[in-house]
Amino acid sequence: MKIKADTGRCVGAGMCALTLPEVFDQSEDDGTVEVLDPEPPAERAAAVRRAVQLCPSGALSLDSIEE
Amino acid sequence: MTEATPRLSTFPLARERTFDPPDELARRRAEAPLQRMTYGDGHEGWLATGYAESRAILADARFSTRPELMHSALPQRVELRRDPLPPGFFLQMDPPDHTRYRRLLTGQFTVRRMKQLEPRIHDITQSRLDAMEREGAPADLVRSFALPIPSLVICEMLGVPYEDREKFQHDSSVILDLEASTDEIRTAMYDLLAYLSELVAAKRKDPGDDMLSGLAASEELTDAEIAGMGLLLLIAGHETTANMLGLGTFALLTNPRQLAVVRDDPDAVENAVEELLRYLSILHIGPTRTALEDVEIGGTLIRAGETVTLSLGAANRDPERFEGGDTLDVTRSAQGHLSFGHGIHQCLGQQLARVEMRIAYPALLRRFPGLRLAVPPEEVPMRATSAVYGVRRLPVLW
Ligand code: HEM
Ligand code: SF4
Image (tube, helix red, strand yellow):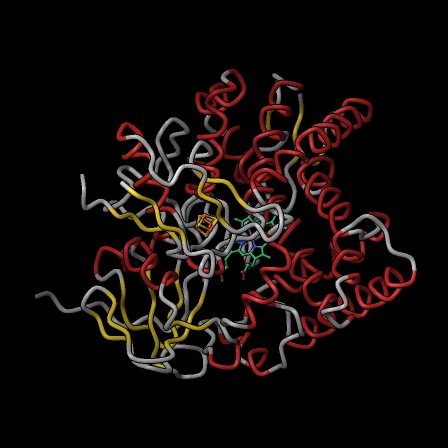
């Protein structure tokens, strides 16, 4: 699983960083998403999916072809 | 197929029970989660009460928040929609204008920044509790606790003198009053804008370590734009959390078992706050959006130019999404609720509001384990006609 983040779409709402701080952070500058761990281990998959679902702006997506 | 019930001609606001949205909305949701509604000006628009439909509409960039496109579901607000929007009031702007203003603020409202504010919010909370103890019971929890905490916090963040609170608290409550006349709302709005413009001009000369000074220093914005952003933050920043604290405490006091969980189990607080947000859904009406082009939502075609009014309260209790949603259960997972909205306008201050509530509810309940209502529950005066629902006063003893 690979996380893609589009900082152009991100509105800095922080749902990702709130839900899964191990994987997502927000820039000090403009609050947009920073992916700390773009290829998180399989045991995080469900939590990552939830965070992606919760993102209000559609800035996060998953590439999971190799799953 | 059964005959559909007649079309609604105004958004229902009157509640049968204190903590539940109007029954009419639940009836409409069961019938059709997205249905036609006739607006105050005769416009044939829509009412959205379903969770999936509301979420889809809020996430869709083909819907606009611009007031000049919008029809009002309440007859008394029809005229206001034609007033020019104050510069910087980005809640009612679409990209790219919205993006430009919001981006200047998002760095200040991150999860991490809000965590750094915890000690200060804790201190403010404790000093309000000390004052309540000194002054003794009975107290009005709104005046002594629920309103001062978020007001003090947003004042400090923005750099607005707390001494001026009577003025901005009064003006904001008029702006949110769904029954105020157009003139009253205009007066309050321009009054508050004039106050903020003066403040911004003063900060340009003598900057402090606060958000309004920071915006003034960037040179990118005019004083009027900064005042408009300040207006949005000031109103959105204190009325909302204040009503969550007041109404939430009332809800807990009438549900002693739920109250005990929030008071006694620190690990349960995070979740309890989400459930209170979901269950109480304090935004009384809306958000409202207008289609910029034809959009299909769950098989229903909304045409360009048509306005949709949402009910977050109804969406947050949609049985398709939250089982037994009419019951307050602080141990359920309320994740995914729409109380902060969804899409690009999702609440900018939500991480601040969360920190405030996570600190304030348990601190209050622990300081006063005997906290109880000083009047019968049916005598608590409600904000029945405000855009933000809540209690006007909450008389308590301990
Ligand atoms: C529990 C408390 C709160 C609730 C329930 C709440 C609810 C909401 C909702 C539903 C929206 C979206 C409106 C729409 O889509 O049209 C919103 C937007 C907004 N809120 Fe909050 N809010 C709360 C607290 C705060 C606080 C503490 C602040 C401030 C500092 C704040 C600032 C804002 C701003 C600036 C927007 C506009 C965002 C945009 O248009 O991009 N809110 N809020
Ligand atoms: S949840 Fe989405 S919009 Fe919010 S900070 Fe994360 S990526 Fe950005």
